[in-house]
Amino acid sequence: MRVLITGGAGFIGSNFIRYLINNRPDWQITNFDNLTYAGNLANLDDLRDNDNYRFIKGDISNIDDVRAVLESGFDNVVNFAAESHVDRSLYDPGIFIKTNVLGTQLLLDLAQKTGISKFLQVSTDEVYGSQNVREYADEKSPLLPNSPYAASKASADLVCRSYFKSFDMPVIITRSCNNYGPFQFPEKVIPFFMTRALKDEILPLYGDGLNSRDWIYVEDNCEALLRVLESGDPGQIYNIGSNNELTNLDLTQIILKLLGKPSSLIKFVEDRPAHDRRYGLNFDKIENKLGWLPKIRFIDGIQKTIDWYLANKQWWENIISGEYRKFYEQHYRNLR
Ligand code: NAD
Ligand code: DAU
Image (cartoon, rainbow, N blue to C red; front, side):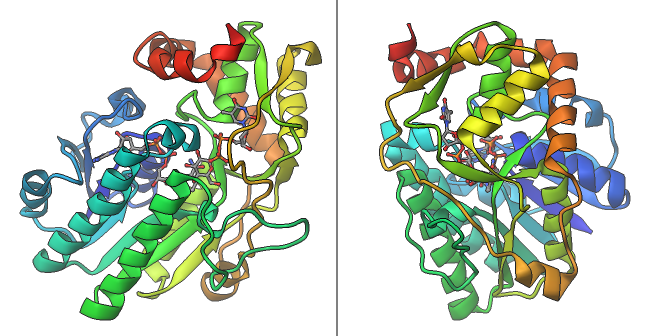
């Protein structure tokens, strides 16, 4: 099996590649990534000499790059490549449309021409917008994105649907809840708060801290993605949830407790514009149709994650001292 993974130098993509190397050792994996601020080849250092893995630098929104990589021929494409941070999409929506919408369309278009067996689009629960308490979006719920990031992912989902309907292309979409685990870029709340708390720096909690998210350990998501890739039906959408719903305040208190740091590090700050109050996913379909359920309890996953960040300080120190600073300094002006 020859698989093209786009965005494989990012958080979930790199975890997925490692998951494939361990669980499908005969698959040939090509990682195609243009190494934005969020792409990091250090995430895959251990695989550099693996004969079944190769890296190609390229941009999913550049026709020459995409044409060149697809020339070698693939059975499957898994599209992780994206601008993925909601806060950044509020500063610079254009790059989200370019990469997430136009890039996905270009990839679909050229992959269709070369012929593939499956195209898996890695999407998000954010496309459904905010859910009321005890409401759960299923795959037929309306798309009501509230941030430019969410709108770009919802748009890409619709383009994927149209390629299935119009051209019979074997596209499948997954929509997962919030991932956490090793190699997550430290701008996302869990690694952001962990790495700051370790330095006794303030943790800026948006609004009243009562927005909630459902948290999935990244390895559980990788297992679900592989299940969908191998057994999912073209044209279908599969939600991937975890039943680990937490308010941001509770999440922060858990992180502080496990790190042995005081609650006084929490600072309530101005809310994120259009901040989705809650994501709630109904993921009965992937359980009923494909027999997948998450395995990792939040308390175990978060402990593993903390252990990883403690053991890999150099990895995140390199990031937070680099390019990342520019965004941080603009966005968190109120913490200076
Ligand atoms: P990430 O930001 O860590 O990684 C994104 C990767 O895409 C990076 O390696 C980056 O270099 C690459 N990339 C960006 N633009 C590119 C381009 N034009 N061409 C080629 N590569 C490009 O993101 P992540 O958290 O790993 O998310 C991966 C995917 O999963 C995204 O599509 C995201 O929307 C989706 N998703 C993420 C979560 C989550 O909780 N992190 C949840 C649901 C869905
Ligand atoms: O739900 C899936 C989505 O989860 C993915 O599609 C996105 O790619 C991913 O970034 C994530 O989006 P969120 O906006 O939910 O994640 P983030 O880590 O940015 O924020 C999680 C919650 O924490 C959210 O309610 C905002 C809050 N937050 C975040 C940061 C960075 C804070 O209160 N303070 C912060 O400094």
